[in-house]
Image (cartoon, rainbow, N blue to C red; front, top):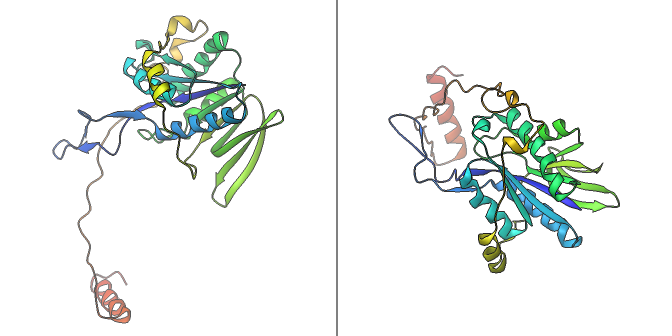
Length: 267
């Protein structure tokens, strides 16, 4: 059993601040982390490996060299091998171009690691919130897909996934290979061990560049292959404080609220 986990290194959104004058993000000094939803995908793969010890977990990311820090974190938790897709020709890729590049990268890695039975992704990245890359990878590869997964387990020659829906939980089975995207489950991912951390620090992570992707069409990658264009980035204006009504009883508060709304012409 081979499982590929797609991971993205993202800025820690809890540390991002806004420039009050320019209304732009202040990125300086903001730490980068493994996208939390991708962490859930890695944990889901690790849980399958817990019950199927012959499983191999490979983690893949696309980005600059600094993304290897996040890949090594994945190695320290559960992954057995890691690859970084990096090339100037890929810079500026939107979700469509990114998924196209990653789908070709999957095929290149399979030549070294063997065929992947499962591809796990986080449902979305916290710096973009598009939830598009995982499903698009499935479309490029022609694989079935299950989104908003909470848990996954093998059952015979199929994958059984608990899927989050508005009404509750659905149980879906799919043949392999299959792409599954994961949302936040009820459990937390495991922590790295000291032994795995030491091994991850020594690990050599191969780069995958455009040269290794022989069949890729570079007009479908980078800015040229990205139909999405960002016209403007801005911070929504802050709303002024409201009025707090604190009368002695609920009935008096309701009358006060009605009076205020009536005077404002709202009722």
